[in-house]
Image 1 (cartoon, rainbow, N blue to C red):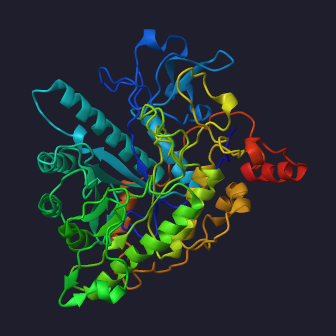
Image 2 (cartoon, helix red, strand yellow; image 1 turned 45 degrees about the vertical axis):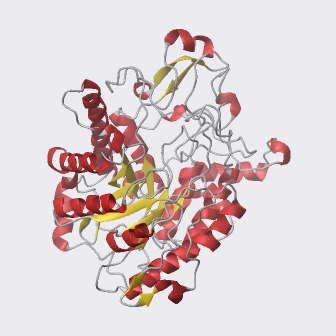
Image 3 (cartoon, rainbow, N blue to C red; image 1 turned 180 degrees about the horizontal axis):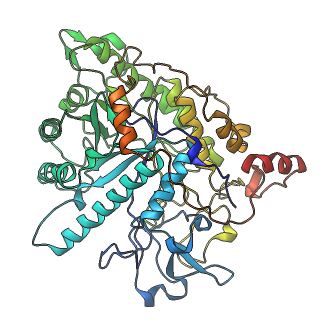
Length: 549
């Protein structure tokens, strides 16, 4: 199935001077394939396969590390890598893509541009950033991550998207994390010159950096270590840094936050305890002060914390609303002293990490429900006042959270004898492969004020998304200040000198990649009881022909 075809040249380049009113997605960039030039001996199929031995994988006997299979009909031959031991029912070879291929990464950003999605948080895994000159493996891994970063920068500049670095400290020894981040950040700004890119995301004149993974109960990071890292990032970065804290579930804690005699617990009347049912939050009271006093934005990680629309709404009502109220009250109490703290909710399409976890996680354990689960989270977040959203994630097929195109039905999956594979019709919905990119694009339009958010799932708009995107191009945008930061100085228009500088640095238009022939489009969206696909009506066929082309 093919999705719609839109020329991204007709759409505006994203403003890199502000994070406000943006839909940003996580970009892992961790997929490698044999022959892609990544230079990772023994890791030639990173995050695709767990066993890469030719003899073991022969005749489909290999062990996959991914649940969701990408729609490879959207890639040209130069970006397709044959997967050893995996074929389709037809006998055709199965292929996958590599994040090391610069053309592939640009294609991923081209899809963002054509769907109106603003840009990415590029994951920078701290455990892969150790620079030991005596270790050839360390150098190879660091070179690989640098190459992915180069690909992302070039793609963002070519397609008019923004990008920002997100450090992920998962699995790193707490005693080493500070030194690694400090060395790597200097490497990025001095050797790789990432901040020289006109498309690097800024807010309040400062480059955006995210620290993900501090504050979990099992990580044992000390608040003083986190504070020292934040201080270093601000002092070592020209003009300082806008720093996002991405961590555990929510920010209301047993500790009472007090400043100048103002007890915010009393002011808000909201719960004051960490949510500890899953034991993932560090209840050290110093962390709450750290988040609210030393960071510019807070982004609680919610992947796996709820599994359906009802639970997502309950979370939004019980936790997110109180979090945003606390942030708003903090901003009002500290106005003019420490600046504003933004709140960035995380949303996901669904999840399935059975193969990656060797069966510890259930297959399709967070059902997508044809996009309704994702839309409910988006609506809940904006209803509570959020105006920046983080989509998790653009390319994470191995955990089943990818927003990029996936195979639409089981008949198109390769044969896998030992590992189940996921496709878009798993929950009984017949969808075009770009369906979740459309949902994200629609959310981005609403955040920019081009449309109104609606609680009901926007089925008709999504079916006709290609036409509506073209109609919106060139229209003036509503300049709405995003609550709950109604008086925030953020998001001021770029200066004339900055616009001139951008014009001199950027291409006037994005560089669209050639279209890839694909199979005939699916022309309807339908759900059925019991998992069978409903018959397509003549009216749906007629409507959909205009929707996808």
